[in-house]
Image (tube, rainbow, N blue to C red):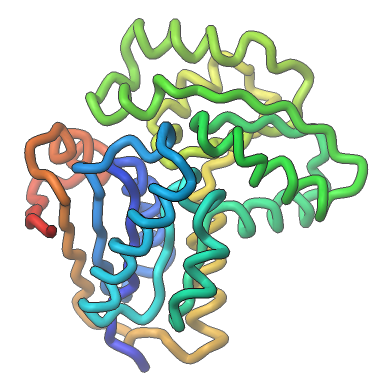
Length: 261
């Protein structure tokens, strides 16, 4: 039994889509979430800057005595996960590997990926898929406007529909589309309507939650059953629209946010 929290971080509200799935899959676990809103967006930053930001956020979480860390960000996973795993002696999971495992297990070969400019540029998704899934065919598209729109809560309006249509118009004949930025599940309904019912929309948070669940069980890190789980939330900048989007996403009115340096 391990009562310590699981640490989760992202550049903003996007990682809450992962937290939501984690809480659903692991209702007895405690969580600490950090939204690095002062540094949002990660997707347009250099690899060196992203590594530095991830290092700081992981140090924050380690100081809070978490038992493992989830990088709930596509950009940070693609550009900093390996480096973080070398630096820190704590289990760290990103969003790419669990998703590729799901694709392989389900023999999905015609794959689309949408993500931030930094993630697509890094080829993290593309290289991982090609390495683990033979004969895979991958189409990728950077969608830099979607994460800022999600932070503003513009996920179901006409602007969102126009943006999604413009970004996806050249992606053809895929079996599944990976939402390679954790902000993008907020647009899932619009994306599904755009691509049609035959295309599976992959929310990476679901795969991450399964991976974390398997890890803590196999390593005896589970919290006790029937305990009242807690979730603490910290932002590096409180002057943002995070709270409004988070309330809607989590279907929860009382969300308390604290400032962290």
